[in-house]
Image (cartoon, rainbow, N blue to C red):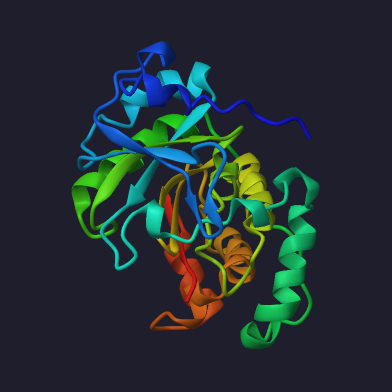
Length: 267
């Protein structure tokens, strides 16, 4: 696997990011991991609260700089990413894992008995895409703006930049440990996120200490599609269903119809 060049060290001498075609606010580079400082910064995040339009202003970084935008929440009990027990050294490469194999394994280990659905039924089919469907990257901008203004999803969101080849790889790129009780190697989850990128146009928009939020350009449009997708969600993050007020696949599926935000939380 070729290593992606990391542009973040340039921000140490050029905090504004002008050499990367950016105009960044004051911020900080994060290299703190559970094992001590990482050789290169894992991410940059702004010191001030994110505002509408800030994500869109980072588009040059996505197109030419090898950096992808992200919202990180610094308002939880663990603070910001420098207190998240990041573990990049524990991560494999998402491309080395088959997403269906990963989900089938999770299903057998965590979900099959609870769901009373028996054997793994296979991946959900991608919904038919129409000419009116949103562009995944443009929708990510809209969802990011919504998250920083709504106030019910994130406590203190900060704009961040992560060196990653694709949005789905962001959690593994920073060594995120949010799903630690479910999966130590987050690259396996990122393999599933890659598949969701391809089938449903998801983009990783926000991370907290233990929560992942993605935008969804092509969500399930019917109950049948949503029920098939709910199976994948159950395998990916059993707590989404088991810790809900109505822990059933059908009830969960009903909330997935036309839903442009998926959120995952691991206890």
